Amino acid sequence: MRIGVYPGTFDPLHHGHSDVIARSLRVLDQIIVAVAPNPRKAPMFDLAERVDMAKIATKDFGRVEVEPFEGLLVQYVRQRGAHAIIRGLRAVSDFEHEFQMALLNRKLDQGIETVFLMASEEYSYLTSSMVKEVASVGGPLHDFVHPEVADRLRQRFIGCR
Image 1 (spheres, rainbow, N blue to C red):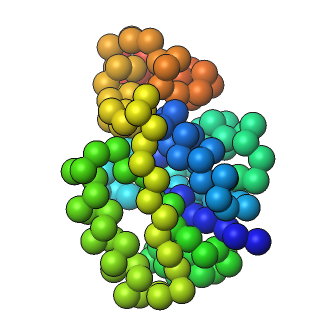
Image 2: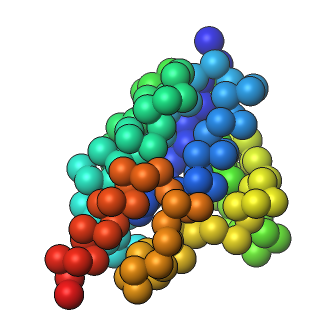
């Protein structure tokens, strides 16, 4: 079985992420969405909330697991018996950082491949920060996130006012 790990902060997981997951399932048998704490990004939602929202957003996929992870990514990938790290690329600006991370991960474990998937054109502009910005001013979210995730975003911003 070919297993891939799709790591990220996912604050929240949006349609661009879901698209990468769906397309990854075309070439891999199973995807593990690994939600990272990443305090450097100061996420709006805590780790448990982000895991829960990612489970909601991926519940209809099949062959997808969602769980939190901490520590070194290649150790987690090895521990889970996976063979690939999945990374989505929106623009050329993403590539440099992702390329460096892929090289570092290869140096740490040559048995793990990084698979880059270009964002679908319809989601190439989308970031979690943009989704939160739209939510913060009460904008429509249906084109960006799962409806239940949109509800959570609205609730969070109502609570902040």
